[in-house]
Image (cartoon, rainbow, N blue to C red):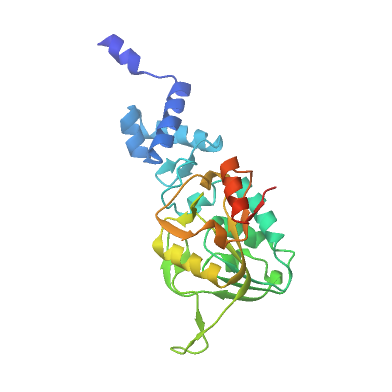
Length: 266
């Protein structure tokens, strides 16, 4: 009995390694569930998670943690804002370089497009249309001449609207045909079949933004490659650029070249 109890005791370093592996496997966990699984107190689990969060191994959330790699499911915006932050900043700087002063730009929801909005601080006279409710607070007022937010149902998890890419001059009046020079579209997953996201309404809005754009740049950090989510946004050949933080696998780079898509990396 005593030997069995002793075998269950783990050194903190060993428990933290097991904890990190468990979070990575599960994707999302709660403090209470971890305490029960590992047979330790809730306070111990909280301390372990806090340390793993500081080390970048997990991402601490209210009441638990998520794995930085577990992105196939929707994550709350406050969680996603802390994921792949350096990669998103690299992508944002590259994407900002595609935008000329005075251009008309569409930006969809996502933390990567929020990074792009911040990277536009030295631009001037932009016209921006977006479904991203956070962009008006993130973008420098000196960067834009006009800023429009598409209406529709609000998805709290993304802090964005889902609805038609349209505006009317008067309530109930006809829709105004709108076009843009460049659509910057952050997606959830990228593979050789195209670009996808987890929500059907989001995919529809993103596809419509692409249809209304002269040029389209897909924004995706390297963790999104080789994955496919529920709703297809568009195929490779319908976009002009893929902006990412590091070179993708050779097979995907070849597929982009065959589709005449320009790959932009730092």
